[in-house]
Image 1 (cartoon, rainbow, N blue to C red):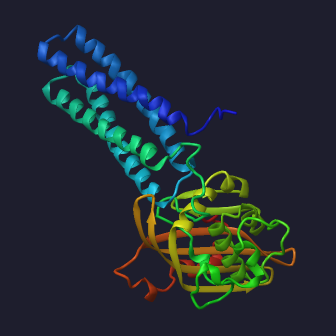
Image 2: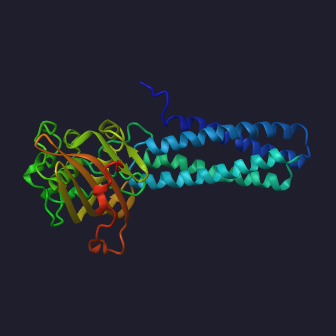
Image 3: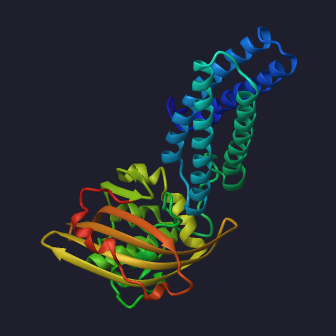
Amino acid sequence: MYDIIGPHWHPIVVHFTIGLLAVAAFLYAVALARKQTASARIVADWTFAFGLLALIVTVGFGFMAYYTVAHDGPSHAAMTDHRNWALVTAAVFLGLGLWRWLSKGAGALFTAGMILAAVLLGVTGFKGGHLVFQYGLGVQSMPEAEGGAGHDHDHGDGAGHGEEEAAAGAEDGGHPHEESGEHAHDAAGAGSEPVEAALPGSPEAAAAALHQALVAGDEAAVRNLLAENVLILEGGGAEQSLEEYASGHMVSDMAFLGAIETETLSRRSRVQDDSAWVATETRMEGEFRDSEIAIKSQETLVMARQDGGWRITHIHWSNAPLDSGHAAEKTLTADDTASDDHSDHEH
């Protein structure tokens, strides 16, 4: 089934934008060189006008793709770079359009501006193609778990939440394979019947179990740990349900975490009646899709007591570059106040 409205419209309409605006720049140059103010300029003006309309539509669909296409941390950086170039290019063309609208002629300076804008358009288009051919963004067959699962949910930061890797409920900064028995069904990997398995008996065990399930590529275990209406915030993006996450970032998160090494730096939690939060800071290093990863990831989980255990209702992932190997000495900051973030869905 095809989606009537979706991110696939961006690569469709962008071809009209590139073609029309590039041809318009060429026609203005021809009109200036041949001094043909009537024919070539009239055609150039109309081509430019239609190109600007296509540009506005393209930018709109571009933002839709930016916030909906499944991706990982490294590809997010490339997406953001493409977006920034596109915004600058669009601003230049729109400024030139306003200039042409208000002026009575298209002189040498205006034509030079069009040629410069066409060059910017070419660079932006190249970066857009790079997203597809280098990172496989928007390619349905690309988001497959590699080597059993990893994680990189982080929409813009690089890899938002690997911190759950700490041993089940352990505060000693262990690795994912050190998890306790409470969530061993998640770490054991996809397989058994994680959906029917008992929920972890402590919030920290639930945090560790989520990480293990992502590392193992165990979708059933992840589904068991997350509430149906879970809110996930990351890198400026948001997924507002379990199904949205499962069809979006989940697979790329699994692929990312499976490719890198993680080390828990700190973890703290608080329980109040039937709700709790867990804040974890993790060092994440390795190589993923030809990109070197060296970040400090911070995760905040908000949970509710359900079915005799703890289920995650809210996630927030963020990260920052490691500082010359001293990340282990860092402490949590913003995520320490996680208990107040119940309403912001974290991603």
